[in-house]
Image 1 (cartoon, one colour):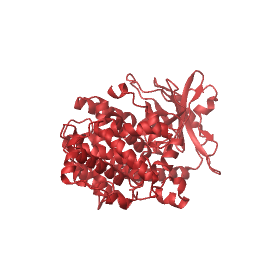
Image 2 (spheres, chains in turn cyan, purple; image 1 turned 120 degrees about the horizontal axis):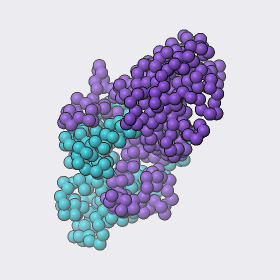
Image 3 (cartoon, chains in turn red, brown; image 1 turned 180 degrees about the vertical axis):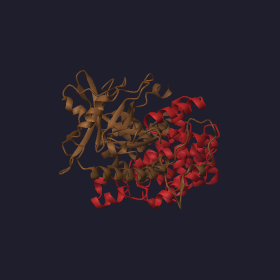
Length: 214
Length: 306
């Protein structure tokens, strides 16, 4: 299954996409956040499995789920998230059979390629890209709610003991457990990562960048 | 805690999973959970963020670092996570003890001249200047102070605080602790001097007086031995923090604990050029031979230039 073949596959209508959002929400309207979270997990899954285009495979997975929903009207045999995983496994198996699937391990690249990879601008934005990364991050933080802004900025203050103490103070201030602070910060960070990726113009990372900071 | 009730794998296993080190039969159940289990997905995100942050902060070592660079960085999407972490961790610090609402985001970024530079870049530039000037001063002084007997006397008369001892470790000679020491050269043709080696105890709430470390003029390094309450780790790291600026000035290479009689200490040598008269904190962290470290304790001292 090549990237071009993925693009040719069935694309959900607006109605099918809305049905998918509703089904993923499981009765609690998330305003698209649930879709984005499942998509993020699928992208990470395909990426860890060395798929060359994890975003495309994640979209293909969700398109297939949407089509199945449209065809059957409902899917009740398992939870939406688990059904997405089962569908993703099929997409992965197809990609493995495809000649398009290439292992991206550094074992396969030359020393020159390795140096190019490890010095790639997207790895080290310390030169000309640094300003753009920071500008994008700044813009994305502005789109967060004030509460989320404060949480994410406070959460990443300091190192080691100071960091721990800062997070304990944050938990006390928000009247939640330190573990809940950590989970909430991780969700905000994931949201910011999607937003920054969209801001940097990498549409492979997030085709639906308009939903980034819901 | 809910996640523990659901028996989510420990952090080390998750790190191996994130680094692609697990065999398929172990990775597949985690794959399923990573998509369909809310708590697992959240925990995995946290561990991945911590792992990436540790790489950016140069805290990964050994196999973990090797695997991170060889596998994790092989994916453009994962490299993007590293770039994001660099930007996030470069955000200027703010007063986290304040209950005041956050400033508007643009005001958080330090502006310098035409461009904007992360705070750490300014610190790094300052460090280069300090190190360079420190080197020039020491180079100018040459080795005149290597055997300066005055330093021994000054150390001897320094008041002993409750948590500072200049006693020599049992396996060392007295002169090792109280005399500027000519160390084996680190580089061919280079000779370094070390002022002394002071035993420091972890800071406690009752520590009223800071232990003093005298630094002889011309000394290249300052020795300290950080006493451990428990020697739990094969590897330790020490960071020197300036509380006045709240900045980390220096980090050690991986260190090992040694025995001094019945106690276990972590010996460390600090670059003397970084120290000016004032208070400093040594932050000790420990961890597995090739994993991330965890904070152990603070060792606060007062630098006294002789």
